[in-house]
Amino acid sequence: MNESKEIEIVVADATLVKYVDEILETINRAAKIRGTGIAKRSPEYVKQKMIERKAVVALCEGEFAGFSYIESWSNKKFVANSGLIVADKYRGIGLAKRIKRRIFDLSREMFPEAKIFSLTTGEAVMKMNNELGYRPVAFGSLTDDESFWKGCESCVNFDILQRNGRRMCLCTGMLYDPKEHQAEK
Image 1 (cartoon, rainbow, N blue to C red):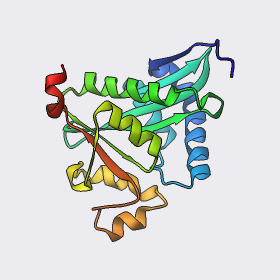
Image 2: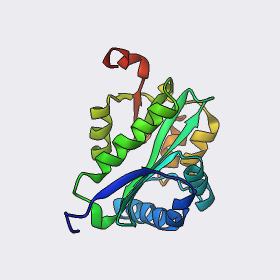
Image 3: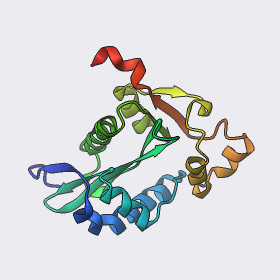
Image 4: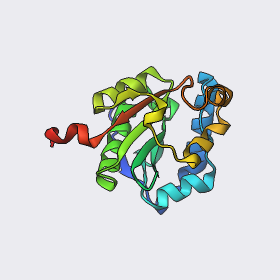
């Protein structure tokens, strides 16, 4: 990649739905390469996130470079930042961290009182979450919203989650509680 090209991270809207298929292909390809679980999302689902302005897209001169989206659970008491992905040619330049920061900030703007959580098997995401103020938690500290946990059914590790009564899996649960960070404002 040409380092002189500027990558912008924008809040998605209806004009960016043209990238949905590429986003989903990139997510699925990365999950297969890593051999990790991932909740599958339909094109309609991702389009809706963009239309609702609950997603960010990284673009480099109009080319897709990265993505993440927001979902709220338990009557907006919990928010998940999900689907973080960087296109292959833009990896290794700190873009994932920039996307993670922007989706975190958007979550705080849209849902200032909500706890933000993440489930991940990736060390890099755990490190980014830690830098943003997340802490590891037991799954019982996350949303009890059945529709969230239903999303795990498409993960290759779902049987582990199910066998353990949804108390643990290969993912690490991480939580940012805004009440714990009030002094930082």
